[in-house]
Image (cartoon, rainbow, N blue to C red; front, side, top):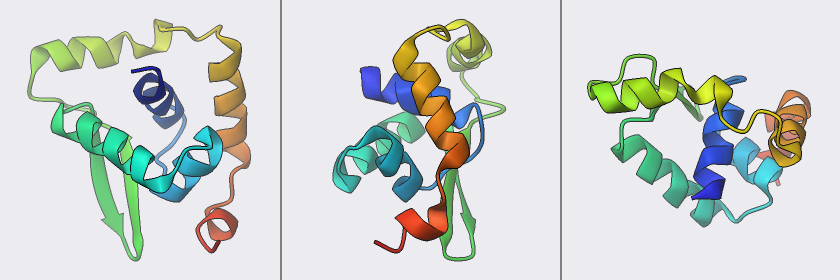
Length: 102
């Protein structure tokens, strides 16, 4: 799914909460949550509780070697795509204190 790939590319930059991902992708919270659940169940990402925040990040040590291989090549996937470049720029500017309080 293109949106799951966009999420993975965004998480290369830093860990993000659902609100931040929702703000960048302009999708509903429920849609983003479903994508995150699929990525988490697949072993691609982890969630980390930090106070009131649940942050999502790339899984640094997946147990499945196939997932590990895919994640290790993530840098080379569609990095020159304008949408991916735009997403990464937005990720750097997104302010969780603003987007999560809406």
